[in-house]
Length: 237
Image (cartoon, rainbow, N blue to C red; front, side, top):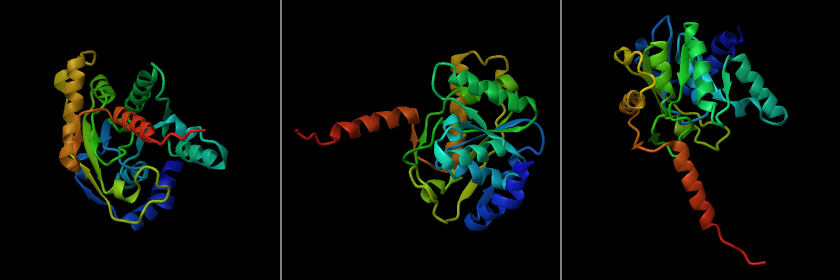
């Protein structure tokens, strides 16, 4: 219930007024039945702007850190995400991917829309990174279509590290549903999962116009963080 209060009464109207999001291809999102909406992830604002323009409820798999932050801010953030029906997922450890898949399949089994960012984390530089295959596993196991989505302009309004977004118009594009029924029963084939994921990422790229990087975002972030650490000056004591 609180989800619809947020969407239609509290947060949704404010977001639509401030950011005036342009929507393209909204007719590609099915009006009923389970489906996956797979999008690029450029900003914390993505969590709110995409649901604001959709006619249906969408549930995202949100990182557990949003639910475990310290202090008053942490408690308020956790309460907000829980009230909005978002599902916490632990991204650490060997079982993290399987846990996310189980939660996602549970959403789809109820006939709902599931929101996924295949990159696994926000882009730190505005580029589109290699997708993780969890989205392919869920699409094949559940037998549901995947609707590619591109958030355009959200990196400019709120790049990583910026707490308050700039007020600027954004565009949200939805592509034609991708049907992977030809791969039914092949969710354990690594080559198939990679091919399906790459097709999804290619569709997102066509919608977003981003530069593509054939590496995982987390890997690039870790490497660049290490390089910056090595460049820090050393002081003698």
